[in-house]
Image (tube, rainbow, N blue to C red; front, side, top):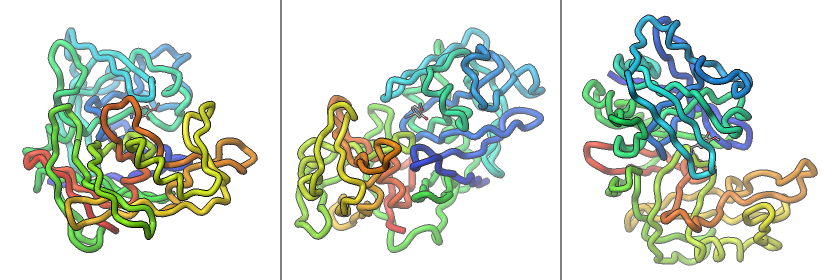
Amino acid sequence: VTGSGVASPQQYDVEYLTPISVGTPPLVLNLNLDTGSSDLWVFSSELPPSEINGQTVYDPTKSTSAKKLEGATWEIEYGDGSSSEGDVYIDSVAIGDLTVTAQAVQAAKNVSAEFTADTHDDGLLGLAFNTINTVQPTRQKTFYDNAQSILDAPVFTADLKDDAPGHYNFGYIDSSAYTGNISYLPVDSSQGFWMFTSPGYAISKGGYKITEMKGIADTGTTLLLLPTSVVLAYYKQVDGARYEGTQGGYIFACSATLPDFVFAVGNNARITVPGKYINYAPTDSSGTTCFGGIQKDIGIGFSIFGDVALKAAFVVFDGPNQQLGWAAK
Ligand SMILES: COc1ccc(CN)cc1O
């Protein structure tokens, strides 16, 4: 079995939403497929109406295939400080032609303001490792883990694009979606993430710099968060760029020319993030000052290769072989 879902960018490619069917009759929810977390949670009829603002809600009492997981609860907090919590139903979940009939669907009873404000996002579908699923007393499996036994190949791929629809594919590698070869790196899943180490980087036509960057491939984070030394070296190449504390990051004139950022995948493969992707978005409606798509990873403990980096590549997530594949496109 295979499945494919379109990944549609929201404004400024801040996140990508994919239509997923839940329950019987199938309810289509637009979810953020997030390789940086492992909970599948949805806006639900159990939320106070004040916390819903246009989202489609899952009502388990309306799904003939829903079964409450008695006594199970969950609560999660994300890196940006947002959070949600609730209870759990076992129901059918499908992405394209791929259906998992007994998937833990975490129904939200409360969500933080950031999620209420995100009117098009009906929830998250976690694609990291089961070890960081938050359901208590018994943690639940991700959609990908549940699907592995029926998938033609036990992999999924992320093909996110700049201001254009891309795809998440399950069970196959679409050879028309990338160029050249796929370079595979070992994954350290000990912290529950798709964690890998890039041995070095280059800035535009500058020289290659050997410096280990240990980070996670995280479709649920918008920007590319890197070690301070790398970020300093990058913005040194951008006239007028400066760190603006009130904005919480590096800013520059929107008219600035931004160099490409190249990171190594193994010793002889490279992914080039076009400078255009690093001119992330205006900081205000005047559009004179722009916010950088590369920012510091301070305080996290590792780097985060978020959408700014991922949309420059075709990425293969291979759980059974604990490896990540990277290709240009
Ligand atoms: C507030 O919105 C979000 C917060 C956190 C994540 C996961 N990194 C995804 C979101 O859409």
